[in-house]
Structure formats: C-alpha cells, structure tokens
Amino acid sequence: MARADETASPPGATTGDAVRWHALGPDAALARLGSDAAQGLTGEEARARATRFGPNEIREGRQRGRLAMLAAQFADVMILLLIGAAILSGVIGELADTLVILAIVVLNAAIGFAQEARAARAVAALRRLAAPTAVALRDGHPDHLPADRLVPGDIVLIEAGNAIPADLRLLEAAGLQLGEAPLTGESVPVVKHVAAAPDDQPLAERHGMAYKGTVVLNGRGRGVVVATGMATELGRIAAMLETAAAPRTPLQQRLAVFGRQIAIAAILICALIFGIGLLRGEAPLLMLLTALSLAVAAIPE
Image (cartoon, rainbow, N blue to C red; front, side, top):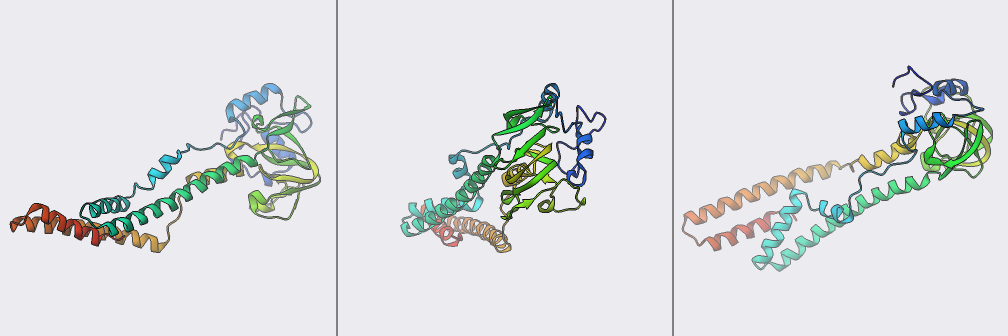
C-alpha cells in the first residue's frame, strides 16, 4: 500500500497483514493513521476515507437461491448417471432398482444442500455480531453514528456493554475486559492494556487490540480504528466461510475415482454388448434392454 500521504491515505488500513498494529505503540499507530487521540478525524477527512474504504460492514457474497443450491447437488457426473440408470430401470420394469437408486440420489442431495445452507447461515450469524452504532470523535466531539460509517483513523469510545464496531488499536484501557469468544473461542474475559506486543504474538494474546464482533464486559477505553469491513479479522472469517470448499477425506477421494472408473467401464461394456448383439442379428430393442440392465447392475449405487 502506498505511504506517500499518510493523512489522506492511511497505510495498512485496508489489509490487516500489511501492518502489525499490535506491535505498534499507541502514538505510532496514530501517526501511521494520520489521526489524533483527542480530536479524531474531521468530518471532511472521514468522508474522504469513507469513499476510499467503503462501508464498515461484513459483505455477503452472491447468495444462491434455495432452488439453485438444490439443483447444484445434481450436477455431479455420477449423480447424473445414477438418475439416468434410475429412469432406465423404470422403463425396463425394474421398480425396486429405481426406488433404491432414487433414494440414494435424494439422500446425497439432502446432505449437500444442508451443508451449503449451514455455511450461508454461519456468514449471516457473523453479520449479526457487528455493532449497529458506535461513538466516535469527529471534529473533537463524541458523535453517535451508525457503525458502518466508521473509517480507519476514527477514534472510538467504548464501555461495558458495547460491541466492538471495528478492529481497534487501543489507546486507553481502564479496567477494560473483553469477551472474545466469537473470534477465539475463549470464554474467559480478556484483560486489555495499551502496551505493544511482539510482532509474532498470536491473535488471542494481542491485549492491545480490540476486534470487531467482540464485546466489552467491563471497564472502558478508547481505540483508533485500524481496519473496517472485510479487512477486519471477523471479515476474513466470513470470507473464508464463503470461499472454502469442504475437504474430502482420502477415502472419499478414492471412492470418487473408483466410481468414475466403474461408470466409464460400464458404459463401454454396454455399448460393446449392444454392438455385438446387433452384428449377430439380435433385435435392437432386446439388445438395448440387455445393455441397460447391465448398466443398472454395474453402476455403483
């Protein structure tokens, strides 16, 4: 990120990894962000930064509708082959095979649909953790404003009962304790202070930081906004939930390869038998039913 104009364009404010804010002292963080602990930002500067950094909100990715999510569960090649086998089984009168294959297909689709819907609900839950309002210094005066209007460099006042509205480098901490369970899973209140931490300090031990989505349990404090929206730690988690694919176990990977191999072999053998039957002068319909019966038996339900 460019560092030529630190006041109008605070470096490190859009990417948490660009600057290790927990390793900077309060004065160094303020200087880096071009802010003032007593005055905060001017209204004009805040508007300029809002234009650059955008709203302080956890964005939801492009959400697929329920029907689209359900349809996607049937896009796999093996699932399509099984559906085809079920249809052909019904055509040739093998009702039991049809019902069994369809039951497996429906069960597979239900499991996949439930997993995708759960991921979407997790992102929505992260959005609900965001504070609706915040108290920030603008032109030297405390201003109650919607939390989505906060920008890097804003000075935010926090007290017991508040949800942290953005990632903050703490400047003051008077008996300040935060609940960081939504971010770290730790249920014990975390005592905060303003001292700088080592550069490689784990997130759960960065006592000079207050992260978006956590809650003030005791005390009061003041902090400067260092990251907003999707650049916050909470925003990163939301982004990972949207983009991460569910890992497949080694057994699932081997079964997928094995299933494809069987399907390809079955199709080739069915085509071969159908062709040989025609060359021998057998009735085309009889050979088609024979080949389809073999396909139904061979496809790994």
